[in-house]
Length: 294
Image (tube, one colour):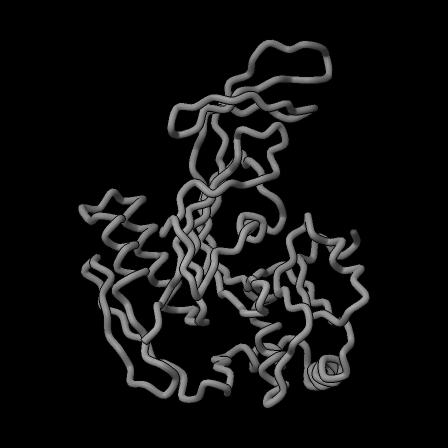
């Protein structure tokens, strides 16, 4: 039996830095690393691939999966649910005509100063917060359902303990090995969920990702991509949807079965790491379409 998820992480906007482009880990459970699955640093960069920034408008919650690879080449599947929370921005004294200093008051009451040039002032801004579950298994729907429940309990102030929900996800949901029976479980929020392990430990589970890849790119393009992947070429996807990037990379590696893709695999590459594209080795990566000219 294996854990459904190894870590639950809350990541938010880092208002202590002068540049509003970084996130920081606000909470992490458990605090100590599992011996069989160490925590991977820099996860905050992948939660907001286009950099962390404040917004003048509230954004709708969004979900996508990204993949991190550890030093032993083991993949860790990260489910991320992002949403925005209001923070107060107070203009302070201007030192010159071109630079406006602003202080940001977060939800916990702490205040810090930011420097903005030529920016429009808003008394209320919105910062992004991400809820992330890290797992060794690609159970997309189960992880998404768990994050949705956590988000709902948090936003609606439901009479359910978030600590109990998180502990149930990390410690009380054991999944059978491939080929095992379907399981039903609850994470303590009056929910009823089920999970079906894959039939084989080696045959990839693709759901609709392969169909979507053929639908979006066409059969000739997909055949060319499979040939490029098997002959160790560099492959870079770009899309305005992070979910499509993850699905495209998953589908392409699945089409290589029974071969296994063993080169650099980063379905969603954050903008601060674009220099990785200059590596001389083969890779399979994805970037947001807004970055394709950089």
